[in-house]
Image 1 (cartoon, rainbow, N blue to C red):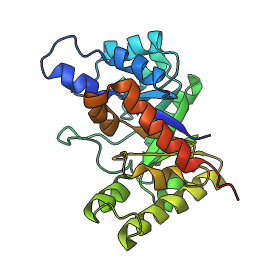
Image 2: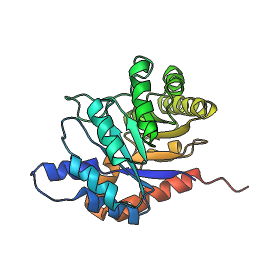
Image 3: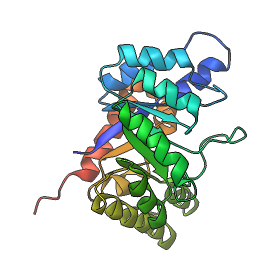
Length: 252
């Protein structure tokens, strides 16, 4: 059954705007759990722009569902992950000047470095994931370095969906969806778990959730945005319903 990982980074973004103690990302994680989330995702950035070290420690101690730690493949972040021991660590590219993660990790271009990072995390008992573009060369490189999970970058699909007037049947949207599907098929053929995420929302998520073999979707900004109006628990509940309906087999 398809699972939903809720990224709560932007709850911390709101808190950090005032450098105060609220809203509390841990509270948001609990509310997400009660709404049906299967896991919680946070990105501990090198510049600590939203999630802080103490957030990660408290989430590890207080949440009762899977914790996915997004991180750059640096010695500092690997050491933090090995100490905290999230259920999954996802290696992502990171730029100080980007607003959010843009583009997948170039695994093929830095296999030696990333293989060492993956090995260190695996030795600590942590499931390892890489966030990559829907390119077969990147999927194959992920298998070579020992990643157990590939999260396929859905940003190009989501942007095409928005630019084409939310028309799920437009040629541009179908082309981007096909890239995700083919990449996912290769991920599974190579023995890895097929996850996906980035820029997914309540309007564009269902075609991705309906792809064969997809295991988890990681969604953050759209859910946090909806939560401003309806609350975190209801926002997660609505997204989880869309995922389940899209992934449900058709009855003849």
